[in-house]
Structure formats: C-alpha cells, structure tokens
Length: 250
Image 1 (tube, rainbow, N blue to C red):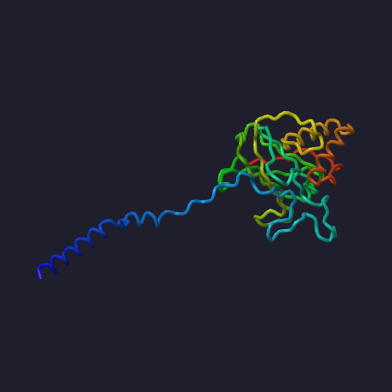
Image 2 (cartoon, helix red, strand yellow):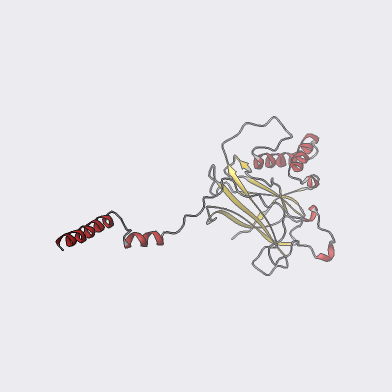
C-alpha cells in the first residue's frame, strides 16, 4: 500500500513538472495580439499609368459639345494631357508647367479646376485653383505659381485637371485627366532627339515657349511633332497655343 501511494505521488509530481514546462500566453498578451490591425501594404515605388485622355466622370458627359453637333469623337474633340502614359514623368523645376489640349473655349466651359496632391492617401493638398479658359480651343498651360509651395524632390505628386461644362449643375466634373509628377536633380541634356526626354515636363514646356516666340521655325516645329508622336498625340501638332488659363480670384 505504501509503495502504491509513493508511485501515485510520483506520477503526480512528474505531471506537474511536465505541465510547468509549457507556457501559455497571458490574457493581456492575447488581447494585444487580437487588437493590433494589419499593416497596410507599402505604397508602390512607381505610380500607375497617367490618365491622359478624358472619358468623362461617372454620370457626366464626355464632351462639352452637344451630341447633335458631332457624330464621332476624335482627338481634336478630346481633352488631352500632353504627358506620356507610363510613369515616372519627371521635372527639375520646383514650380513646373503642365500642358493640355482643350478642344473648347470659354463659351463651352463654365470653369476648370487644377489641383496637386500628395501623401499615401492624397490627404495633403499642395495647390488648387479654379480657372476659366481662353476664348478659343487649343493648347493651354498652367504653372504652379512661384509664390506657392514648391514640390519636394523625389516625391510623387498627383495632379488633376478638371473641366465643368456651361450646362453643368452638379459637383462632378464633365471631363478630367490626371497624372503624376516627380522632381529630381538637374539632368544632363540628351543627345538623342528621338528618345523620350528624361525630364518630360521641362522639355515640352520649354519647347512650347520657344514655338510661341518663333512659330515659323521649322526645326522647332519638327521637334514639337516628334515629341507629340512619342505620346501618340501627333494629330495635335498643328493646334494653336492659346496661352495660359485664367485663375479665378477667390
């Protein structure tokens, strides 16, 4: 009997020793693990493609011209951002200039809006302005004012260019293009004039300025056509430069 009691006690002690080697998470640890939200995925190193041609907002028209006035919509009737589709598209300027082909004048468009945003959820607005268009259709420019906040280097900014037709009574834009810009350190000029410029925004804005000053310069005209061909917008090579948009005073 004594031996049986000793054997039973030995098994009990052995069992407690084995259980003592097993660790269980505390209640506090379990709560922390369950309440920690999953980490969001890191932002992409390169933004998605630029949306360079308007298609109209959801529930809105894709043109500021009455459908009875045109049967087929062509590039000459489409809002187009003069930038490549694939990113990155670069600038060396702290206050870059953006170019757009707008097939409408001030009589068809009530106003436009241009904004530049940044941040993982685009919660930081660098710049926003409302504007009216020149009287006639053509290629327009818009620049970040020199007195506005500069774009930082090596950061992607998302810009939006929106148009609201004269008959629009909603808060949604009728036409929109959007894209990305990234500022980098100055880069040496390219010798290959047929390749996509490394700093696109600077190159096309500079060429547009020179063409406005010397519209009959054949070398400049050929270079302009070559740039537009690179972004599949060669049909716009003969479209006029109609100047910058006109910011609305607040």
